[in-house]
Length: 120
Image (cartoon, rainbow, N blue to C red; front, side, top):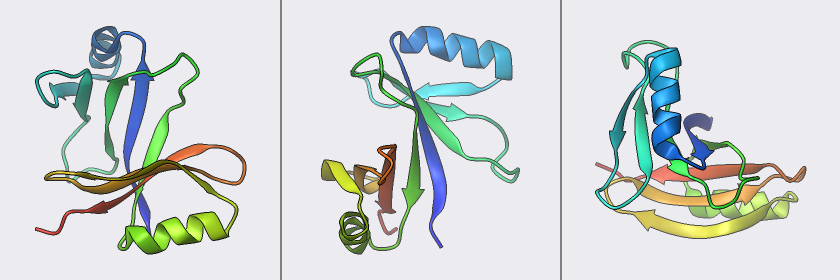
């Protein structure tokens, strides 16, 4: 069964958002890459329940929070999304060291991510 494994919180000012979530919730952040505004969360010990995510620079003010669902076979999942009334809005891409990822809208128009992790 596919599980939600990651969230993305878009922000106009990612550094300000990092300060907010650090101060209010005690989260720690690590910038991913040198030339971008993408900050990965550390929200608690890995053995405790919960998922990790990121704060990122938004592309526009109405950009929603996105949950990413991990799947075993991304190509089959893309086909199922489209066959069942969903729409692929950001095509499949490979993220080195992470896996294959895309963004899609469900039939109600809500945005989600789907990811097949890179095999180790």
